[in-house]
Image 1 (cartoon, one colour):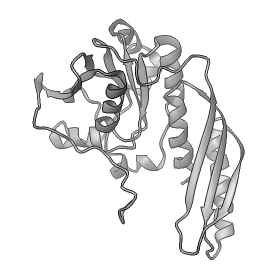
Image 2: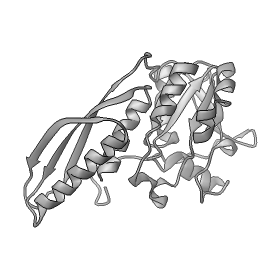
Image 3: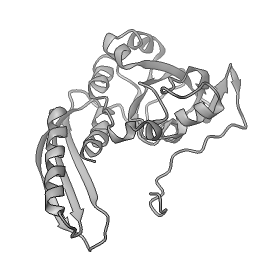
Image 4: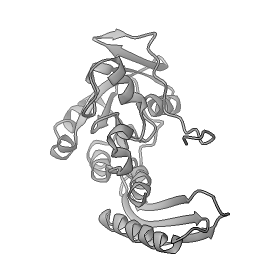
Length: 249
């Protein structure tokens, strides 16, 4: 729990090319047998996770919740950036769309329990290649890319057969659906000018993590998925949603 809390919070800093500086966290927990011992273990794990990412823990708050309440954890990260963050609104027609790492299968593989924020990759992209837009993929490509497109008032064409699929996924519509809609990838989605993108694809650090060009930005608004060059007009993957009201949430 502590590792996930730290990793998913720092992923937002990765998306703006920031170096982690400090973390603050909050716990709300109800009375339970051995609760104090459990909270101590959780705090130690949180400190260890923060130290691994070179972020200081500067404080937080512990609150009591009613008996039987679920444990609620929140975390705030503060970072330092040398360059202005590109944000989501700068994508331009003709730009290339790139992603780090591999997509899909996070819950089935257990990767969602230990997200790896792409901090070094985010800094490298912003410092050397100046993306026109960038964000992290927390809710999946099918949910997050449209947010960037709406902010930039543009459209996009994404080639499913170029997606870097996670291990265990097959290059079929089921596998593509998992890659774009499973959520909790915590990879980076970046939009770069074509010539700059070609240079970024050869960068040693980014190649080690994996950097893949998956599509292009278009003037016509909307998101179009293609396979073997043909638009799949009837293929509409269901994006990840946070259903806090369900029993499974």
